[in-house]
Length: 323
Ligand code: CDV
Image (cartoon, rainbow, N blue to C red; front, top):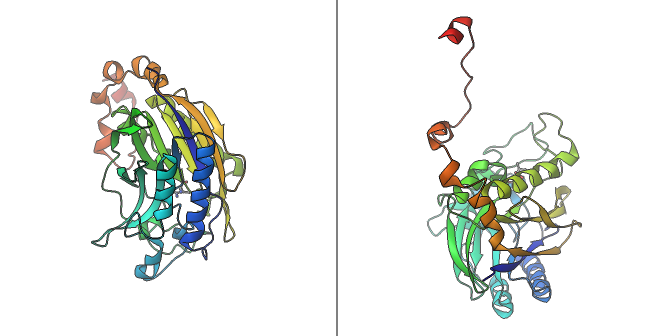
């Protein structure tokens, strides 16, 4: 039997610092209604979908930032999202800032069934940016201040989605740039990777020039390569447009296991894109070029897990070469 799904990326335009949860939740519910009209069965919302990208704002006292976090999901404020999913029979992925009952803070995403059950939770592993105020930067990127490194690894779950069992996994924003994130999920036969991102149009590190157009290119390059090399689909959903003067580049995409872009957002606002995914497409890569069991050589990959930073290589000398 063909296993096919209608996938949607629900890109969100900017959420301003002054906007309350009701603003984001109202827009998310409207995108959910649209997803229903367009026949979507899985909808992926961005990273930190309920608030502005608050790690750009420095707070000396982290407790002052507490209002950006969810301590329960659903809550009174977020319940309308769960109600819409139930009403329309749609499974959804949502990124948000999580504060646990024992006070830990994570950049988190959940995959929720239409009946409101959290089927999978992921906490961002590759936190970019810095912990303390950085005077060199044009704009702060304080994820290392506001979040702990995720403690759930990169789990993949075989979950019921629209009548099929689907191997689903998640990553968040910067994780997409790291082949390790994809491969750990590829090793669990992931079929659908869901990921949200908030990526500025300009490099804000102020440590060298990076051409504007390459920012989008690098984002797409990593997602397309990740899908091809691990024979999976991805729904990659952006927050887009200008948040309090800070521009995010959008360009949400849905990608197939050949690494092809099946759908792409064209606006910098709230926008829904959809694509039909035949999950059988994952088989070709998995049984040929990327048949891991046949072709992987972990005995040659020791450095991947033994080492964190790079090391200089051995230096060539005539004597060494002769050995
Ligand atoms: N929210 C993010 O993780 N943003 C990062 C930074 C480096 C811009 C990204 O990879 O897009």
